[in-house]
Image (tube, rainbow, N blue to C red; front, top):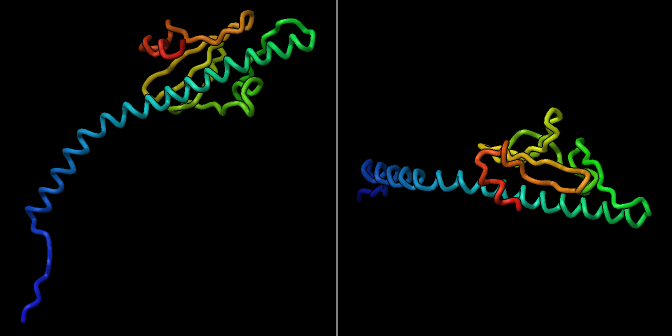
Length: 142
């Protein structure tokens, strides 16, 4: 008696490879967009914490009798005086950078950079629409 060996034919293997290729072609563009959205969500969270930290530091200065003073933002590590432990800087997606020449904080999303300005006199940490491209990214940080 002959033993039958179960195996895939060449046509079946090619069919499976074609189907996987089609699925990958459909899924990869959606995955790329969701990675940038995740980085932007991370930036939104950081900006919210930074703004809260600035208000907290101002409240502390009032309680100490020093007046309503907003703190300087540390640059190494970034924001260490308003976020516990600060944020490690870098230029990859999901990382912050400080540009000493423009005095702006930059968040990298991968393909884009979102620029933020800190105004110590009024304690605002806002998105810079002029430097951020596309400008619509700033709409997500109101």
